[in-house]
Length: 144
Image (tube, rainbow, N blue to C red):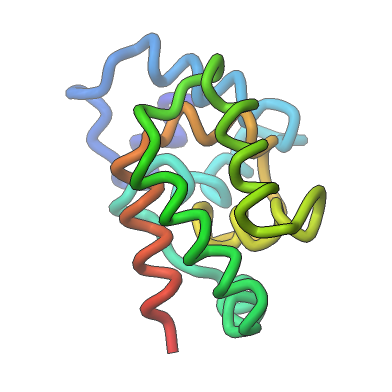
């Protein structure tokens, strides 16, 4: 997959190979052919991040924006996002937002990845980290 990252203009020389392997592991179930990796680069590489139009529209809904505001509050009070801490964090988000399943995950996915579909969110979030997730939630809330 590295040639596809380089072809997309990403400088990956400074990125830990183990981290790249983790990204590839998360993405592999979403790819039919390797060239499709370009569709998902924005999730993991800020220089390629955008909110797709469908996600933008979805995030304009007041209930989805409220979910993101609540998620931001829960994240601000949490420690770093790890695979081990994620179940507890998601439980807190369910309690705080009153939303579960797709009603919780769809706004989170749109706000954090800029997409309506993509790799499994529970595997993606620990790779993004708290700081990047909070930054993207704030960007999503700033959309108009």
